[in-house]
Length: 65
Length: 403
Image 1 (tube, chains in turn orange, purple):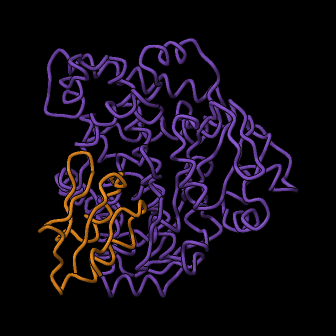
Image 2 (image 1 turned 30 degrees about the vertical axis):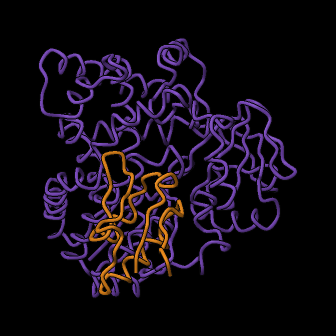
């Protein structure tokens, strides 16, 4: 599984970072990036899904599923 | 405080200060969603109130047609001081009341102070504070969870971050309640408390200018926008905003969460037994008991369905109502502690998303985890004795608990 942050949609709610800190980081202004090129280890797939489905800006997507 | 006649038609004459609405607004939102869904009132200076999630997502992005220059539900009376400030830096309380182009540079001054990493730095202070508060009442087996616990957590934490005297937080709470809770219905109070807060920070800003410390005020004073230092008045206004926005709001969220667990023993037991649910539970409680409604002012004619906002019309961004929209949330009127799909907008959305959201989340997390660790079993002594504040910020103000 891979995830991607659509950076022009991200407005810095930081929900991804709060729910899946192993998968996302945010900059000084709250804009998120996916860590490890968006690669999601199997044991963190549930967290990745949580991040996708909790983003109020619809700014995270699963890539190539 | 002025008395208003009871509401007979919520679609055309709503009253956000109606006591029953403050106690439980959800039935009104449900009715409005089915009927309008954008309600109107002439009360309190007049406003429009959308209740759908989709409308809220659309309205926050209408910038600057829906301006942030006045975000209060009831507009403050015009005053020379207020107008002079508006002229000087485009906003009375930057960045919350700023529009482009001033908004983003002002907002970027404070965002780095409230990143997830930055707020983790404040966690040890907040956790110690929570323990000390509980130490103060645990032996007596009862407390007012709103006044003895919840209120002190955001008040003392924001005082610590701004760099003001933590012993004066009771005073700060009085000022903020005067402004946000009483000031809406009593303009003289609003002006009085606003002035008090600004005078307090003016003195402090001048002191830090003369002798910088390692705190937020000194940090703001050392920053620049376009090579220019930040105006003294802008720093004062930003401190004012951080104090006002940082107290009633999170107090309400912590209080509502504790109220929920006292009223719902099943959820209380589950929370105590499954602390790994805290991350989703906190987001769910933020959704269900979202405290904050903001306002916008139309700067041009805007047509939405068969409704027309005229220039100068006020539009309420009722985030709490949006978060109960059954089109977006499954079982919207139920608290589901492990809710997986939860795109709530308790912190607003769009370019004005709450700058302190990470801080609020950390404070709520610390407050609830420590409460449950130390007082896993608790109940209300008298549910009828609970009182709620409402309007701009909704939350419980008295929570008599025994444990």
